[in-house]
Image (tube, rainbow, N blue to C red; front, side):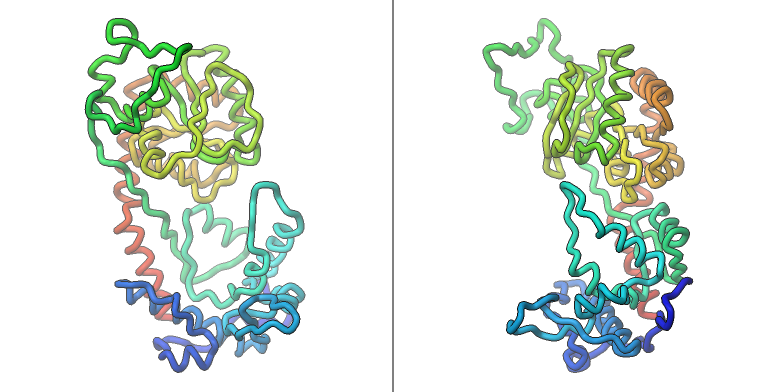
Length: 387
């Protein structure tokens, strides 16, 4: 582990649960740390604050305050697990390694559009005293170890919990009233006698989403911020190449729009949806596209796999590719030609889609149910206590 000159990364032995009196003496008693019906989590948060305060004292760092940067003459209370903002920025004492400090300075050197970060808390709240590190994915662990050079003995891929909707049929006359589509003068809704969906369609996966957005054929879905930084610009270029050969498959964009979109008949926008409806949208799709090149969480991938919809992921996204491989639930592309061929395969080979979908559903059920995620988190807390 690389260290700044003279910096100590160790701290005092804090293995016992501190009392309220000890927490108050160390200026780290926070009433908000109490989580109803979760005593282990409450203890973990209080022990972490206490450990941070003791680490700060042991390493000779001054105490911070709340507010982090109080105006002149304003009242402020001391916070044991925090450093004064100017001191923290000058020394970088909150970061585990020189690599982490360099990354933080590079990240905060410019303000990116449409993103926000609490710069004050980034610098002032203590990170160096972490007793255990929980991670979202194996890709995040690789970043921690290989790039930041943090080799913690107590890190674990905890993951995130995914709640798939119950599998059910959606008969026409039992739809949610919100799913009703109002006809307009210049739009015709297919009739039962013409191109209206058959009974098998009405019982199909994700039927409410398909009916609401008039999607009567195959479609691919993108879920996330519609932004060039998320790989959407490249995805749209690649999809245009695909659509020029296979124009019957729509591309539905689900999320806030942060870039100008081309005026193409195959392109549809579903806007921002609440969690429940978002999962139904994944269920309705034939394939989910994950174009982001550096999404360490890869939540859209897991949500899609959870409902049995295969994924087409950007090969540069290590987390998404890892899920596709481990689940055997999707394909990935490195260039335009691979994107077109993979998407054609996923929209025409029904057996392949169903097989990948069931593999993905099983993968999420065995690895990302909330009870499993919480179990791994409790194990991480136990590691922290033991240190």
